[in-house]
Every structure is written in C-alpha cells, then in structure tokens.
Figure (cartoon, rainbow, N blue to C red):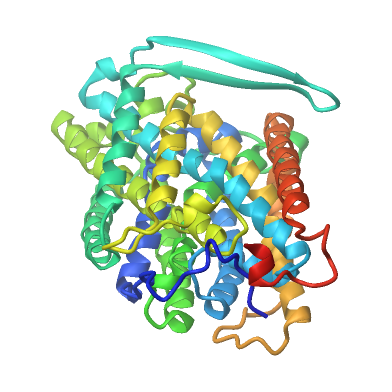
Amino acid sequence: MPTHTSRATQPSAADPPLIRGVGLTGATALNMIDMIGVGPFITIPLMVGAMGGPQAILGWVLGAVFAVCDGLVWAELGAALPGAGGSYRYLAEAYGPHTLGRMVSFLFVWQLSFSAPLSIASGAIGLASYASVLVPGLAAPLARGELTLPLPLLGELGVRWQASPGTFLAIGVVLLALALAWRRITVIGRLSTVLWIVVLGTIAWIITAGLTHFDAARAFDFPAGAFTPSQAFFTGLGSAMMIATYDYWGYYNVCFLGGEVKDPGRTIPRALLLSIALVGALYLVMNVSILGVVPWRELAGTGQGTAALAPIALFMARIHGTWAANCVTVLVLWTAFASVFALLLGYSRVPYAAALDGNYFRVMARLHPRHCFPTASLLALAAVASLACFLSLTDVIAALVVIRIALQFLVQAVGVIVLRVRRPELPRPFRMWLYPLPAVVASAGFVFILLNRHNAARELRYATVVLLVGLAIYLTRAWRRRDWPFAPTAPRSREQAA
C-alpha cells in the first residue's frame, strides 16, 4: 500500500524526478568511502584501550559479524523498497504507512536530524586531528566548557564542548563537502569513484608497510587474563564493539540513495555485501599490521600525543620516518574528507523523502530546479554538523551510535520480520539468507552494545530525550493535522491533507 502524500509536498508533473544514475561500482564506492572514512585511522587507540590489549581484534571480528547480519536486513528492505529515504520508507511500510509506521518513520527522521550531523562531524573532527600532525597549532585549545541540564527521572544531561583552530578547520571541511554535493548525481557518481581509488590506495600502503615490518610477538602480546570472562571483559568488549560498529557503519549508504540507483533490486544488495566483505577484510589486516609495529600499550595511552591523535602517522614514522608520516597524513585527510562527503550526500535524501510524504517539515522537500537534488535538506544537515564540530570525537561517536541503535537499527531489524508477516506478497528481489536468524543476531548485538560498555547511562539519556521530544512534536503535528493516532480509522485523502 503506498504511503499518502499531502498536496503541498506531492510532486507535480512539473517537478523534476530523481535521476537513477548510480551503478554497482559507484554504489559500492560510496558505501566504502562512507565506511572507511577517518574511523579506523583514529579509533584503534580507543579500541585497544577499551579492551586493554590486542584482544581488541575480537571487537573488529564481532563487529564484522554484526555488520553482515544487519547488512542482510538492509539488503532485503533496500531491494524491495528502492526509493529515496532508506529507513524512512522501510519503517513506514513495516509498521503500517497510515498507522504506527507513520509515527515510527517520523521518529527515525527526527533522530537522524541529530545522529546524521554527529556522524558527519565525527569525520570532520577526525580530519582536523590528523591535520594537527602537519600543523600542531590546530590542536591548541582556545576554550572549553560543559553544559548541564537536570532532568526529572532521567538525571543530569551533560554536554561537553571545546574550541580550537582545528574546530574551525572541521567546520570548513563540512562546508566544502556541501559545496561538492551541490551538483547533479551523475557527476557525484564519478567523483565518488575517484575518491574511492585514493582510499583503497592509502589502506594498501598501510597494510603493505605493516606486513613487511610485522612482529607477531608484538602484535599478539596479550596481557594476563586477556580472554578471561569477567564483568570488566564484557564491559570492555561492549565499548570496543560500539567503536567497531561506528567504523563499519556506512554499508547501507546506498539505501538512502535508492531512488537514484540503477537496477536497485540487484545493485543495492550486491553493493551492501561487497562493501562489508571488502572493508571487513581490510580492517582486520590493517589493524593487525599496526599492532605488529606499534606496541599496544603505547597505542592505548591516554595522552594527547601523536598516538592518540594520529596513530597511523606514528605507525608510518616508525617504519619509514617523518616523510612517510606526513605523506600518509595527507592521504588520511583525503579519506576523511571523502567520508564526510558521502555521509552528507546520503543522509540528505532522508528528510527529503519524509517531507515529500507529508511526514516531516515541508521545506525539506525542495529540489534544485536544474540538478534535481534536495537543497534544504543538504543545508540543514551541514548547519547542524558544523555545530557538532565543537564536541569531542569520543562523545560524538558514543552519542550517535547509541541514538541510532536505540531509535533506528533495533526497530528496523524487528521491522523486517514484521514486514514479512504483514506484506508476504511484496516483491522481494533479494531475500535475507537464513531468515530470520540474521535479524535476531543483529538485534542481540545491538542490545549488548547499548547496555555493556563504559558510561552507558549517559548516552542512553541522550537517546531518551531525543525520543521524548520527537514524540511530543509528532503527536502535536498529528493532532493538528488529524493524522494517526487521532484519525486512525482511515488514511486522509490528498484534499484533507492539504
């Protein structure tokens, strides 16, 4: 059953359609540059520190397993419902486009208004951290503080902020990505392929350098009791898996561009699974290579030196000297920027799809009159991401992972099962392997990450606040528009919606 649209946002015959200009190569490239980004180049000290040794590799392995399981969820939904918006469309159809699904899909877009800019900002902040290797003054603090808000029943909600020259560089990166995304999708498909080639070349150099200088005793220098089951072990594993989840995320980016993908029933599943397999293998080999060159205790240090800010630069300096450290830093900067670009591009299609359906703020439905891309959505995400650049990388990663798992991924993993029950007749060009096991495993992994890690309560408060505010906004709009649940007996006609 198609979702209803308001007359104000329904495309007319004069409205330009989205262009299906992204093939398998472009879709896989967009996914991979979204996945790789700056994450694996800056989070390895966080991973090793969380687990207290090279057993952090377990976090990468389990992260890949859960990425495959969740990727199968996205593959089935993306092939069956290939349009702009990704999860917005999937959640609406799974839970009922005129009933509960309308509220659930609105809440998804609402949380994305926070989590997507956080994701974009994380790449920009990571880029600025690596740039400090070349320009040390970028890391010099200018100001910092903390905003706190006591909340009834939930406790204190705190946000730490900081400003440095690197903060303003990060904001400039977001604005440059906005400028590049402000063009026709067919041009962007070619641009993403060029960015992808440089990303793969950077990782290939890192892996080759590491394997040719590999010391197995250093790489597998496990501390005593490294794998002993204990509360500390599982808490550390939860924190490591949260970071790995952040680093793997992006395999679904093509789903948000579903309305611009060629032959989506075949291209979307293939791009998803190809990108997970390739990136998972690259991550595992790359991180083992690094641990075979730089002692894990040095990587896990809590200082703000090169190991903490730019571990790959330290790694290359140990092997080839300063010139290599500077060279790999430039390549990582390129990779980080490619990720920021891909994130901004993909997420900008979600508020557009919701607004077109009359289920989000109307202004987000605006398309560029000539090049046919969502203008208001791009601008809004870039603006919020620029503000998020004032937060620390650790806080940004934790907040976005928890908000998105709680308010999107868990609901969607359950939703693919609900959709099978509600809509068995829906054409499914790709069906999840071993259904429903991948969806169940993905859900269990997400719950583990939410509950078993350091500072779990703080980020769960963020997710709860986002949920409650989103519910209040949705219910207020629904009451004014006589939408579900205030008019549950039948969907409104287009004339009523207007």
